[in-house]
Length: 325
Image (tube, rainbow, N blue to C red; front, top):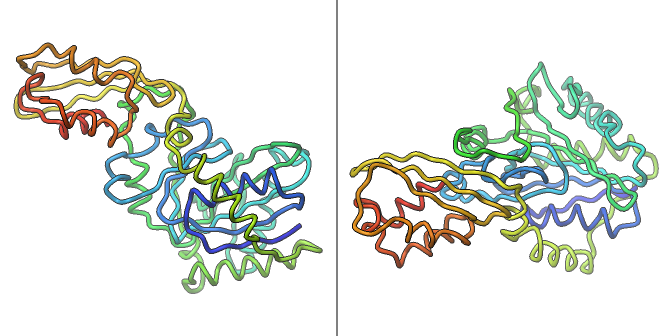
């Protein structure tokens, strides 16, 4: 097994690195990594049903889909992520096999953690780590979060969503009581020190493990995968299962209800209902929405050239776009 640590905070690169190591690396792997502010959604989730789009947009939070199932999680610099990649599939669904070294490493820091249910690590009954797995090409990838000093305000804001907006056919996340590891240490430590202590513990616990760094060839291949897959709208939003969207908005001239049917991230049907007035038949505006991505900038750009007020008195392109998220 090899140990890898790299200091990239780019979520798209880091998720691409996991897939690259799973598919292209012949060694078993243990890797530690961090992301800048990011929501990471499970492979089978509807992205828009997991996030607050306006909060994510205004706070410059990345959104990326991972290879594994499970629920959405928030990453920032105070969250340390770990990845195991091993040959074979005999440990698939055996979360205890992969979390045991993490639990032992934390015990060495004076923190008593335990595996609870299928895939959560808890301290005093509160979650600080979610874990997920997948198997591909005869190899198993297991990864998890370790909330050291995560920003709770952004975690709550980014993942806050009105469950009535989206009738989702994907797997929804389940809210949990959460805690930071820092709150249970004798003294707060930096992510860098935490990573160093985890590294030392893992190197001691796993015989024969060797440290290694990504080569230039590795980095180039990961960047290609990042750009062609993990940084794309098609993977992060378009891959979502079909869903129906409904939102009611009150504005100065009345009320508007938006109904959208979305498949592969693209609006298939649109209906704009309400007690508003307009000089043009709203079907003309509804037809312009069909075939567009259910994505804020895409819709705003498409509506920017339309005189929305002629269809819905008192509403402009920005207000209508906001009504669709």
